[in-house]
Length: 203
Image (cartoon, rainbow, N blue to C red; front, side, top):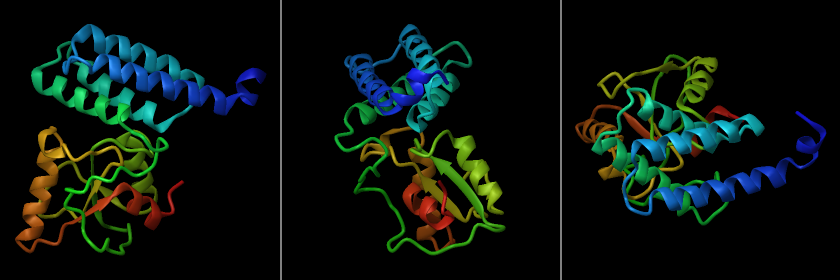
C-alpha cells in the first residue's frame, strides 16, 4: 500500500462507494443487465478491490463473476443482478448497516446457539464479505457448512443486503423452503447476518 493510499483510506473508500452506487443506478435503470454491462461492472469491481478491501465490493464481485462464469446471462440471472444493484443503490443508511426487510421470516426472538457441530447455510448478499468468507468463519468456530436446505440444516443465515423483494429473487426459494420446514416442526432456525456475527463475535 503506498503512502497516499494509507493516509487517505476513508476518503478513497467513500469515493468508491459513491461511484458504486452511481454505477448500480445507471446499470439497473432499464431493469436489465446484459453481458457487456456485467463485464464492465466486473472490471470496475476488480480495480476497486485492488485498492482496498470492502466487503460489499468483494461480495458483489463474487456474484458477478459467478454470473459471468458461463459467458451467458439468462433472464433469471439478469433479474437477480438488477435486484442486487437496486438494493445497493437504494441503501440510504451507512453501507453495512442491517437492511430492515420486514417480510423476512426470521426467528423472533433470535435464538441463542453455538457453532460446534451445527450446520449453517448462507443466502443473499453479506456485509461481512463473500460467502466463502462466511463459511470460513463458521468452520473456524467449529461449525459445518451445508450446501442446500434439508432437514439436517440447523441455521439458514440471511445476508444484510436482502430487501423485501426477496420472494422474487433466486435465493428466495431457500428462505421459503427453510420457513416451510420450520412451520412443519423441523428445527431449522432462520437468522440474520447481524445475529450470526453477534453470537460468533465475528469481526
